[in-house]
Image (cartoon, rainbow over all chains, first blue to last red; front, side, top):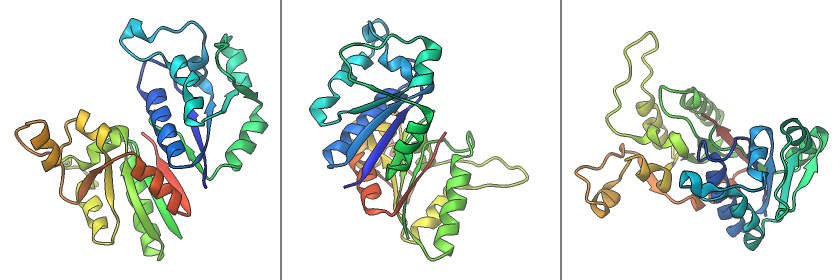
Length: 119
Length: 131
């Protein structure tokens, strides 16, 4: 079984980056991969509370994230520095572990495949 | 060693193709194998038929270089969801959606996202060439 790390580094709603990364993560989970998702840089905005995707005719990302556990994707991580810099207020329906840069480096090193997706 | 590659950038727009092609040709020359090259997001335009490369100093014909890889047993696989929404259609999708012409270049095929995961699972190394 391979350990997959999907990195989401772009803000939601301006591109399909986050949604397509999550779709790929769900496929990897269905194929029995051990899947983790790391939010960093502008990607931490996906975790912001009170999102409404409907306003721009898109799925609400925070709701998609909350549903990941039904695909047995439980390991959600966020970059501590990225969250603090942007003062993101995390949606409290999400269980996300914040990581230092050193911890992110360990997470990447412990993964068999790191998927970063489109920019 | 067995490699799986993914390409996310469009031709002539980013360096994704040039980097991936040079890497793929080098690993094959060194005796390694490539399980599959998976084209995702804007990368599916690599498989668009009818590309006329710009006539410049380098005369890079990306499509020919991709197609040459199929003669070395490399599978060129486009994400079907990414491809059809951008108009890159094989015969089956052209018929299904009642379009005038197929637009997929010879040597490429449309596959599901599961084929990316399957390639990563059976490869020793997975490399991404982002947009």
